Image (cartoon, rainbow, N blue to C red; front, top):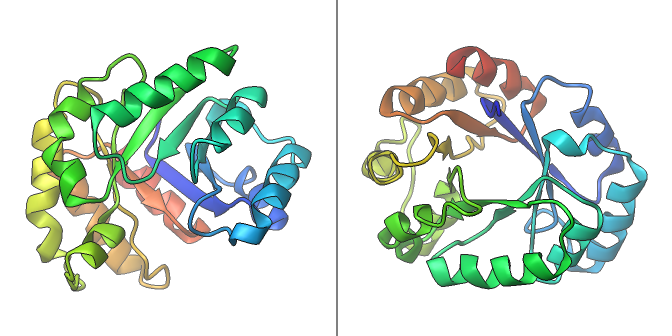
Length: 217
């Protein structure tokens, strides 16, 4: 499975979802979490169903366990799990998935808290469903009052730790770069991540996709 570029799109924005499948992103992640207002969660699921998406390259970023039924009933390939912090979380989700799924559902944990990073090796050991992990630096930074500068030096040690402790599975997906207008900054972020040992990059804008694909090829 290729995952050089991992494009996140809000689940309640039909135009963005449809456009995502005209682009060259290796994986599309349709979000039901932070980018979708709470009052639009149910509407988002109906929009996703109506878009007839390519499920072979689509993951759903869930908001909570109630989204798992939607994922399994629609037979999506897998989920991105925000704020993964323990192996127990994965085991609980595994139990829920087994009761409802007709196809194997992958889990890509998002490591975005100090607790999650501390338990990284045990999270990676859940190979039944976890083949790749993903780094989420922005919520991590908020939680520890960390301001990230343009060269991202403040998260260098976190990145090194993620690569080092996930060596027994596929190379991890690096965090997104929020200033989508700064293409040079995004390119430098990708180059650094690749040098450290990441296998792909979270993208939040179409202009980031080709850059990420080229660097992680």
